[in-house]
Length: 361
Image 1 (cartoon, helix red, strand yellow):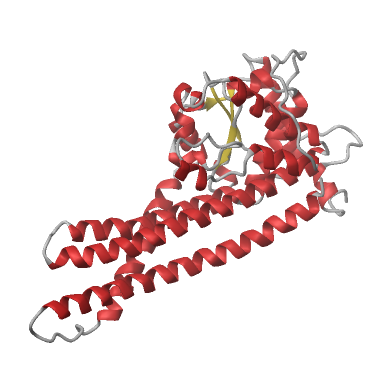
Image 2 (cartoon, rainbow, N blue to C red):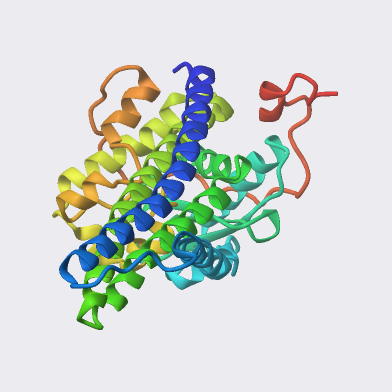
């Protein structure tokens, strides 16, 4: 896997998509004004008198549109600032208990080791119990409230090397600021949706208001759809970036690659929709785009707006070729002792030194 090339490509594509997102907001504001102009001209055409445009027509249209978009972005972003731990608890996750579970001790050791090696603060480790699906997510606005949560299914079926690949992927999201970026984009999409909702409310008043409300709804829906598409595209690029960095940090394709191949096998051998049915928390809108692997879409529109590349595409990028699913087997590894905080093995080469040549000094 040419992880350097993949990381550079993902970052470049993210910048282009974010520029397109800003352009989509500008186009939405212009579209709302244009739709209201057309609605005004249609109203004048059916009335027996000539009515000029009201004073400040352009300024009011642009101002109200921006107020809805930016206000909705601020409100939604403020709600998401509650912190990664509270978000994880909202979907049923709990703090890891290394003292009572060998699997959770191994997970805590891995998170600690990778955090030290990557020279980044260690996030809170949490577990999503009673969830057989192999999955994980990272959340948090900054290092003080960062969290990495792993499902019970991942602890039961992933070997240490695979669990390292999964954790490295999630730590990459925290390292690159993807959790903040995704929450900001989610807030902006919510703001775009408010324009559509505002048009719907105006439309309910009937009469001429129905005409103007319909115009706002049409422009708002187009803007919301463009925002959702761009948000999903940005999210897919950040998944590619996290995959590449996980391979780089762990120096193993079989770590994260084995996780994705086991998910392929799990989904092949279980009924469709079992992940949504067995644990509703993973389907929460606030966390679904943060998952290691997103839940299978229920309809064509959901698959079209997927926030993650397909498993086959991600495996293809990691291995350079298509790979078959990997059979699920219960993990049978010896218990691990707790690691002392702030230590690494003597003479060990840190993962950060593989990225920064001065990290060893």
